[in-house]
Length: 192
Image (cartoon, rainbow, N blue to C red; front, side):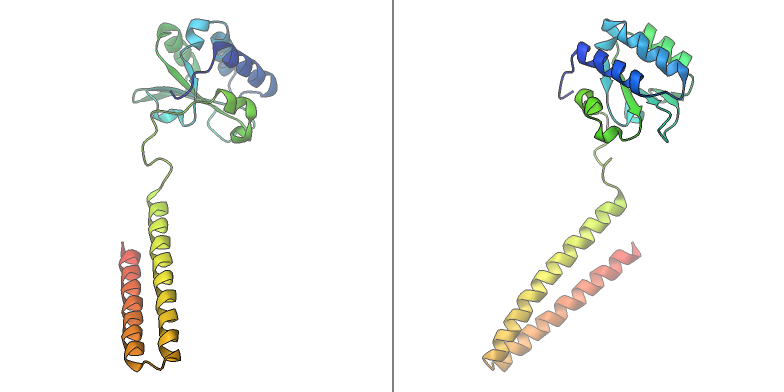
């Protein structure tokens, strides 16, 4: 983890959260209250985003959230049974538990961001989809194409100003080749 959040800060945050949000499952309230009252457990609690990637993660949702009410992930097992999760927390109190809280405008919450830690289990490509990579590649190719085209057009104008027919022909051939290459690369990309 990149930062260490104090137990007192976690307690303060959980109290704030329980005071300001109604949870979709009452068992979630029990779990959070249990954590507040057991510092040895709270020291192993990490508030993160995307708990589904963690070896032992939990999603707890408030009524104002569109997320699932409750999920518990342990290795490759997923359950919506909060009681089973509670027993796992109690029995494995020295193992880290990663909690994602889902509530309206959670990304903008100063209180939540104060206790939020980096999720060390996120896949490297989590934030970038294949489509986004493809769009970035297309944008880069377009930008390079436009820059080269502008440069050639400037040189063509200069050749015209100087009435240099040979240079004009060379540059227009280069411009045509550039356009052809760019169009061909776009066609290949469209077929992928």
